[in-house]
Every structure is written in structure tokens, then in C-alpha cells.
Amino acid sequence: MAYTVTLIPGDGIGPEVIEATRRVLEATGVAFNWELAHIGAEVMDKCGTPLPESVIESVRKNRVAIKGPVTTPVGSGFRSVNVALRKELDLYACVRPCKTYYGVPSFYSDVDIIVVRENTEDLYAGIEFEKGTPEAARLIKLAAEVGRGIIREDSGISLKVISETGSRRVIKFAFEYARAYKRKKVTALHKANIMKFSDGLFLAVAREVAQEYPDVEFEDRIIDNMTMQLVKRPRQFDIVVAPNLYGDIISDLCAGLVGGLGVAPGANVGDEIAVFEPTHGSAPKYARQNRVNPMSTMLSGVMMLRYLGEVEAADRLEAAIAGVIAEGKNVTYDMKLDDTPAVGTAQVANAVIKKLEE
Ligand code: NAD
Image 1 (cartoon, protein in one colour):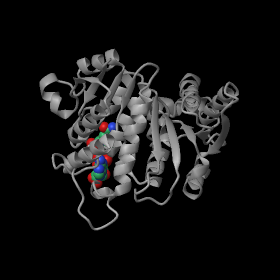
Image 2: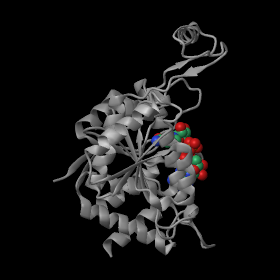
Image 3: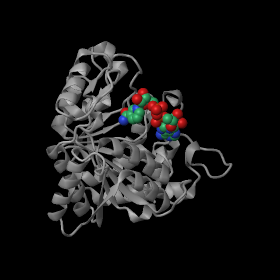
């Protein structure tokens, strides 16, 4: 049986890393029907929107997509296509595995952390009040009236919104992930000592959910302490679950611990839909140069295979990528440890396919 998967090349370096990934996924022997879907600035002229409804429908129907990065032009007037896609499909958990592969230039070995970030609320909910507007003035007045504190009149305000519903589903996701992938521990991140009603709620829900999973160890960490612990002793962490803002920062920190953007895969997951994509952006200055590292996207493909239940193919593909990294010959410029020349994006795919055939 072939899997029908929505294939979204994106823009910038997206089409190159997606093509390399499509080739290695097919080389595993798993059969795919790719449903090609375009989003981003380039479809804006034709469709009047950077995210055509047909693309959302395709992902909704197929329930699985693999996507290249998409540029968000600064000051162009259209919102991030990535944020819109996650919102439309209610992809509430962002999963970022951060694992060291032998041969990747990094400070640590043996790091293997899964960051699960809440994707829909917190300070990123987009509920903002601009300085000097009547709406901001009303909120400032309300805070004073109900005795919640004095806000300076010349303040801009962004609301930090954390709900029980939003927290519960992402925390449950982290525990279910722990069970499904035989992981031992979940660590919840927060600053509940200061933000009692938002982070405090997240922590209370985490403690409650943890009771339902006695087979998985649970602990919590205050976010500032967590950053230090991650740098000092990253191996103590397994799965980390966090509200949106902390999750965003921590997932980049963890990617840095294991060698950076070249090997940082990801997925945005909802109850029935998953979109797999690399952590990095569209790096427009490298577009169409056959230069960048496709491994983040390939490793996102490995995650997709596991999600589809193709565990054996996923293990083989991950081992092939790890083998190419360890040899250090057929890697892109960002992974080079010696003075030998780097290879291009397509050549990395060739090397991974060759390894799969060995
Ligand atoms: P970026 O990740 O695109 O690039 C930053 C730098 O990282 C690049 O200049 C390059 O040196 C390096 N880099 C990135 N990917 C690489 C790869 N595969 N191999 C080797 N080196 C790599 O970040 P940016 O410049 O901040 O963002 C560019 C655009 O991408 C922006 O419009 C941003 O909004 C968008 N973006 C999209 C997504 C997404 O689609 N999910 C994610 C992040 C950023």
C-alpha cells in the first residue's frame, strides 16, 4: 500500500531539501503517492493568498505532510504562512528531537532530548494591545479598577494566555509520546513561582496528568534554572514539555547543543494530522545553489516514517544518515570537520541512498 502524503516544497532552499528528502524516503522501499502543494510568496500572485485553501484541504485529507521552509517577508502585510497552517489545522504540539550524531561538530555527545512545545497559545497567541490605543487604555483602566496593578499609560501589552485545555492536551501528548517511544521521563518547564495563574496552571495540569502515567517519571524545572542545567548536564533530560515561548527558546538551545540547524528535525502535530518540517528557515541567500544541508528535512522524514508505523524503514534511513555523517566525506559545508571540500545537497542524498543500499 502506498501512503498518500502532501509534499510542500516551500521556497528559498525548501525545494532542494524537500527533493533530497523525497528521494531518500523513496529509497527506503516504502511507497508514496506525493500530492504536490505550493505555498508562500510565489503562489500569492496566482491565488491571492500565500496559503491556498486547496493546500489545507490536501493536508486535512491525507493527514500527513512533509514541508520545506517558507519565507515570511518582513513588513509585507501577510502573516506567517507557517503560523497560519498550524492554526488552521490545530497542530498544537511542536516536536523537536535533539540528538547527537557521531561526527557532527558539537560540544556534547550522547544528548537525546525531545522538546515538545505548545504551539497555539501563551505570549504567541497574538492578542496584543498597541501603545496609545483606546483598547490599551481600557485594559489599563480595568487592571487598576480590579486592583491588579498599575500599568503605565505608555505601555504596549501582549497577553500571556495559558488555558487548562491547551496545557492538558500538549502535556498528555508528551506522556503518550514517552510511552510510544519508550522514553523514561517528562520534564515540565515553567516560571510558576512568578506567573501563578498562567505558568502555575500549566504546572498544576502537568502534575495532574503525570498521575495518569505512573510508568513515566515526572519532574518540573523553573525555566531559568533549566537553561543552566541544559548547558551543564544535558544528558539528564529526556522529554521536555513547555509552553510556547519557553519551548521556542529551549528547542533552539537544544538544537545548538547537538550541532545546530543542519540536524534539527521537527513536526507539528495535532490529534489526527502531522506536518513534518526542518527547524531551519528558507535561507534565501543559499537558494538554488545546491549547497545547504538536507539532513534536518531528511530526519523529519525519519520522524514521518515512524509516525506512519514504518519503524524498520525509519531505523534504516536514520542509520544511513548517521553513517554518512560519521564518514564525514559526503556532507555539506556546515558539517565539515576537516579541510576536504564539502558536497552539495543532491550529493548528500546520493550518499544516503548508497548507504541504504549497502
Ligand atoms: P534560516 O534558518 O533560514 O537561516 C539562517 C542561517 O542558517 C542561514 O543563513 C544559513 O547560514 C544557516 N542555515 C539554515 N538552514 C541551513 C541548512 N539546511 N544547511 C546549512 N545552513 C543552513 O533563518 P532566517 O534567515 O532567520 O530566516 C529566513 C526565512 O525563513 C525568514 O523569512 C523566516 O521567517 C523563515 N523561516 C521559516 C520557517 C519555516 O518555514 N518553518 C522557520 C524559520 C524561519
